[in-house]
Image 1 (cartoon, rainbow over the protein chains, first blue to last red):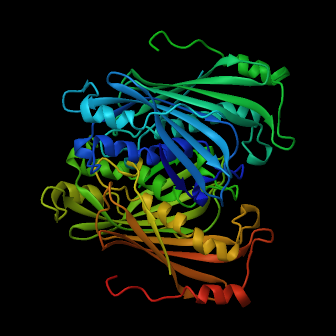
Image 2 (tube, chains in turn brown, green, orange, red):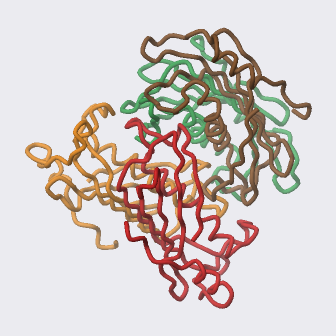
Image 3 (cartoon, helix red, strand yellow):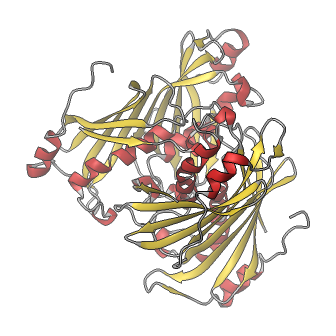
Length: 135
Length: 135
Length: 135
Length: 135
């Protein structure tokens, strides 16, 4: 599991006074940098090996400006060429959001899915985890 | 069904040369303005009557900068106090994204869900529709 | 002069209830699509011929969610290889923002500025204009 | 001077492969959280005491995805009720962006500028600094 802390900016808020829903997919993508490095260690976009197939985010409580947010990132499903990333946002210890992203190991030159094998598969297995009890 | 056209900006793209995945939740929120007006006709945030419970987006094909994107918005489920908004993005006639957003009719003062009744229910019913055959 | 209308989305607002300041550089970039087409008619990023050298935005009044915003875009200075784009945002007829962007005609392969000549220079001259009396 | 590190997300890039220009105003606002706390220690938006009057950003070099960016924030001018925040972005030790933001100490209830006095003035003076030699 990868853990990061993000700090909301004023522009992350909306007129309801809390963090806007569209910021969660963005923060979750930022936090996936840790997973992206398993595929592309130097994060060079010209060597990119992933595409996104699906994204889901549950909104269970509001996130507020002025207090840090913890993002946890792990692999909850590992298929042949695709896998699911589960991500949790927490503020003041409360689980506010649970997200799932289906990513596909992909060759952008041939536009085809590629099996996840060898050291790459082991690296993803090492970050595999069940979803939390409070989810 | 509400239909709108959005034009990608350069900042909507990412280093893979296409529209970044995080823009879909944003464009879908922009397109929900039409639905929001059924709840708050002048869109005054101080009279807001909705919260988001869940968001899903499927990514079926890439969206490109330089060509317009059509967004279709309709109600695909109407519950007691919650409903599901289905949204489609299309470019050059191809369905690239299908999104679902679960919204709850909500009283922000009492922090409670409120049944959808009367003229409001009728207005939402008028925009109810099945998902498309190509979805 | 190019004129466009943008409609604020809920995510464009911030906790002060108005449009967040960071949205103006984004909307101004969207509106520059019209100017970008003079350099790259199909907007193909692989043929891009511009870089940004400087951006300024004045904030004279608040922009509100729920009402359309007019963006005017024109050339206020035309140098040898660089030019300045002036952009105005107006809501309900009031000038709320005046922006200036210094762009450089640029060869991304050789990483060098390129003089603006011939038909391209004429096209930019055709959109040249003084700033408004109310600015 | 306040110093922070930001890590670019994939969505911060654009089709030219580098960080998009519109992200600098956003990152600079995030980094101003440190200054905002001098005015509103708990960052509660309902007690907000500032408005933005002007923003400028110079673009001297590209910022790349995959490497951290250092943001330095300080006060370069302190007027009666307004002040200028200077902000620098650096990657791999190179100054890539210099930004200036004119903020006004403001009473959002009466919609009037308020003089910067007493402990607040001293706090801002403590973060006052000249712009760097390489700027």
